[in-house]
Image 1: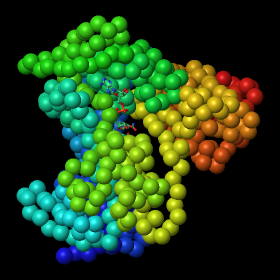
Image 2 (image 1 turned 90 degrees about the horizontal axis):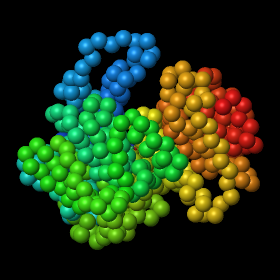
Image 3 (image 1 turned 180 degrees about the vertical axis):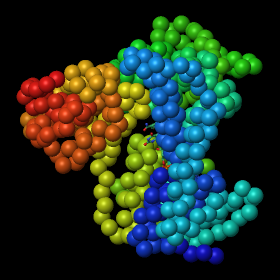
Image 4 (image 1 turned 180 degrees about the horizontal axis):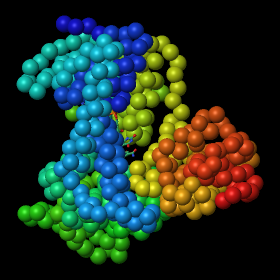
Length: 467
Ligand code: FAD
Ligand code: NAD
């Protein structure tokens, strides 16, 4: 029987990053992954494949809708959807192969099979053929992630009523795609298929889209996506769905409380994700789940059982790959006796629609509910020379700063390349910059980042210079 200092269960961005950091810190490490490949949700059926389809569908959308305006003629434009999906598979494979290489490089033993606690120091691994082996370990990091949440009254058949996993590998472009949930998955995958020609209808229980984001951002996102042609049915309560042949009928109560039917050829259920602990044998070591089926952990990410840690989507907090990665590093360093820290307030969130929406820190509604005195600086991309040049004038940058001290408390942006720009807000907040600090830093001209500087100027003393 093999012996390890630490065994990581789950090969997603939480698990593989934890394993690498543990190996760097000199430990003998095993990683157990249920599937044949590492990478977890993020690399196989999440971040990477969705961005591959978002990027290519955006190229197509631009060629179809915007190139003529730019003076570029396009003849015979068409979509080879099979090739798009195949290319997405190639992108996934390149990333997944990269992780396999990193495991070898760091001398981490990879076991493919379901990991299950026999005792807190003994893990059973059952492979696809049903063969079982056991390994011994001093400590364990659980990184088993999450899976799509199903609605109890709306069974997913994976053919017509699908989750994000199937939506990333369809064999045809839906004609009428119904999406339940206007969260990040609904908006991103809705954008993909809308650009490729599907009629997309998003049905949302609440009265807004991307409800966790700053309300200004959520309103602007709704405005631009509606302008683009995606249909939204907000404040609408889904009651069920039936499939007849190739047709799906979703039944719901609309805002006025009237019973309605929505028909499509596919229905994507995107109402959140649930922590995944099935088959892990937590009952054998006395770990009980919280009310949302997450594994409870303390500030050191240690569970109620000493020496057993848990990270990523399976514990509290945002279900984001970069959050899982930070926690992987933290757990590894805690195990090595170091004193790392994560500032959860500074984990940015991004929605990869176009324009992109990105946030870090407090939203305006957070500050209001905390009773905190704040000021706002907001500038529109309409006033940005760079945005006019590229034809991307929708959106804005908004910063929230402490009314007394001028410290930046939140940054919310919707606009071109917001996903890449939000890091300026993260760095500023990490170093507790004031809006004036940023407004006095030279930003290259012309870039989209000037909007961040101008928003800071506007918050400092309402004196934006060029916007
Ligand atoms: P996971 O990535 O879910 O990995 C867990 C792994 O554990 C899985 O491979 C699973 O098979 C394995 N496992 C489970 N149980 C066992 C067991 N008992 N034994 C062995 N192995 C087991 N986040 C972002 O930050 N940016 C994005 O752009 C983004 N896009 C997304 C798009 C989609 C469509 C989806 C669905 C998610 C997206 N996410 C994104 C969220 C991101 O994928 C997750 O937050 C992230 O993958 C969580 O990492 P994790 O390591 O905790 O878990
Ligand atoms: P989400 O929590 O972002 O959104 C779910 C939406 O569904 C919410 O707006 C909610 O109000 C709505 N909803 C819930 N029940 C409903 C019902 N019965 N009828 C109608 N609407 C209903 O969840 P998601 O979009 O499924 O994404 C899952 C997780 O994956 C999220 O935590 C997200 O952060 C993560 N993710 C991140 C990215 C990214 O970082 N770009 C991309 C995709 C997914």
